[in-house]
Image 1: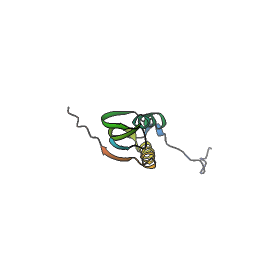
Image 2: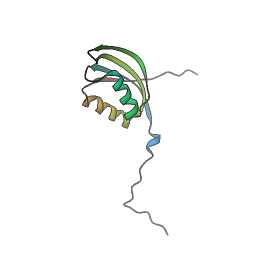
Image 3: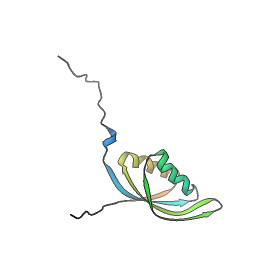
Image 4: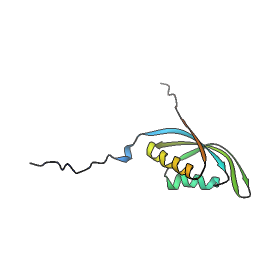
Length: 103
């Protein structure tokens, strides 16, 4: 007879975490270049995004303005991204994106 080990932990499959569709607005304050932010979101966090709107001005090589991104992300990945934005002093606002489907 096989008995389960009570000390054994079972981890759930993180690949099937539910994802949410969000619109993320980031205020660029000159501390980070626009291109650097886009590359970091994709390369470091693995979050695919679409730029919905961008109003960016460059002054002496620094990026100022705002950008709206559409992202489809798990809660865990979004928390990591939000921590990164706060760490770099980038103000961000998030809105849950809901698309009405007609049949």
